Image (cartoon, rainbow over all chains, first blue to last red):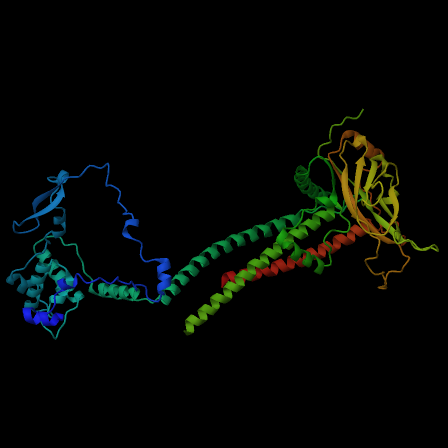
Length: 371
Length: 213
């Protein structure tokens, strides 16, 4: 007898899940991993059994701080016109101290309102009707002088839209006159043109592209660098001037040739020269230490970076790097000459720089004149 | 007895010249490559002055390859002759007489064996002509002792006493150092100075012009 026949006889419906229990349960073959062969999977093994995994415990919450008590506290906002009572949580310590701290942001504006008479007498304006001004005052009251909102809500005449600056101008003019009338000082002054220009400039500034910003930074950097350059050039020029002065001084006080017997040319001139020379000699001698020295070794050298140029100039003038016959007179004159050459080189450097700057400024002037 | 006190404000310069003369060695014997030149290094005074009244000895320090490179010459003439093949730097140390109470002075001289310039007529240097390298210098005594001053006076050495004119003969051993040579050099320096001054003035004018623009 088959199962279906029995079911018919006993009038039972479809076989339920319970009937399948005594059936031998097929071992479920896990074909879990996609792509891995069965053999490989049996080698690797599936996920580890749960008993091997140890649970990670979070550290017990311990802290030295004591629990801070908070309290649900009722408060009123003195800036409100009604006596609305609200609740908020604050620390138990601060429960009764300060008032509601945010009430200062809700301070009522010291806005004066006009009567109809006052309007007719003082506040008439050709571009603003009384209606519009009334609406404006009401909006200012309602929105607490937040002009962006007021301008948005101000929709009296759709064909004549008012900008924020127009509205502000009207408002401040009204307020100023009202304060005048009532004899109260009013310090807010509103300059419409300046405001419009300022806002435009602000918008342009905000809308600068990255390149423009980089250009501006670059130009600012250049300006700073030029200023520094100017200061440095001025210093160099002073240095050159002192060199020039020293130069002329040196050339005026020169030792005469070494002579076997000095025949005085002119007694008075000789005396004057002698006095001057004695003074210079005393100065020179004071620099020398007592003892013996070699004349050629007393020649001081030119500065490192100018050495090669100085040498070139000496060559052009037909003079070697060291005097042929280093007597005292010649050594002194040689030093003076080297000093003059140094002065000449510094001067040339300064003048070259000036020429370059001059040329640049001329070019700039020309382009700005034509451009 | 003159003291060792120094005479304030007195400067005495003694002119000298130093350097070398070199002649190539030619001979009938086969040439020795290590000894191609005979040279003499010296320290001398002008006018054939005898320097021994203030110079005690001169020590020439030669290249290490010479045996006993420190050669001390303790009587005039203060010179040394040797043979060799190469040019090198000789250190010359002049030691003064004790009466001067002065420390020794060091000079350096590059030994010249090979001609480094053409003959006066622009022809290449003749093979047998000696090569000269003589340099003028002055020993400057600042505030010499009284004793030394007496010595100087005795030897008529208070003034440089340069020969007036350049030597007439072209004898290589007498150098040209003289008042005449000094005057020539001074003129050259003065001319150079004038040119430099002119250039400076020109630049100053240019600077003033740029300042005004």
